[in-house]
Length: 304
Ligand code: PLP
Ligand code: CA
Image (cartoon, rainbow, N blue to C red; front, side, top):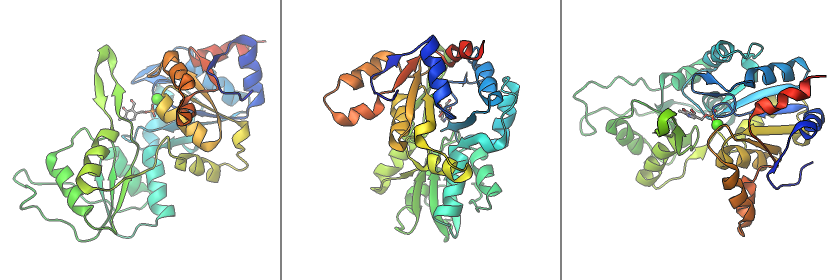
């Protein structure tokens, strides 16, 4: 195992891969579910891995919910044995970064959903209260003097005023600039898409002339969070399973993990082959070690 080359694997090869690995990292949307619909068979697979004593964690760039809400979502969709400690979301890891890595002193200006602020508050990180009166503009609104970080995540209530305020805070070189993730867009049903937080981060990078520090995949930080909370995590024993080459496969590659692409989400096998055939060696970090149609293909491995 371990050679790159997007091989589609089946039956006995899946069985021996599952036997060889003891730590499984699953991306969520596109692998386990699409929005509120579970991928057929995914819950059975995850439940079986956990029952067989494998370590299983979830790595999601979706910053819109605190971890408790994920526990409920897992349960609702039939993933019955998932505990809070197994969930590594970009909002939770952003809170850990602010609290434990940079030990931020002062307030954080958050562009994001209420769930992101809830996760920060849970970790004891003060967020600026976002209650602008309707007549506020960038000409007359107050700016807080003690903002020490701007954190950008998915925000479905984004306003021009929020972008403008964030740009002002980022003028201070001592104010950190963080992004929960840099996902460009997310698929919706019916061919529609949602712009991802990467598009908001890009706007602020242009306005500030700065580069954001990325917390979520493909940055290594989520894996550092996992390693610090589970003892003895050996990258060689891990399998990263995801649906997007530019986030999940690159994340695995950045962390020294074997990677598996599932074809239930964003990336297609042709995209992987294109990266694989590219002369640019940096493109090879997007190439999965293994490809399956769906993680439901794991199911026969648990049958005697
Ligand atoms: N962020 C948002 C707002 C999303 O809606 C999604 C997927 O639907 C994601 C991130 C990506 O999540 P994941 O990393 O689990 O694929
Ligand atoms: Ca995904």
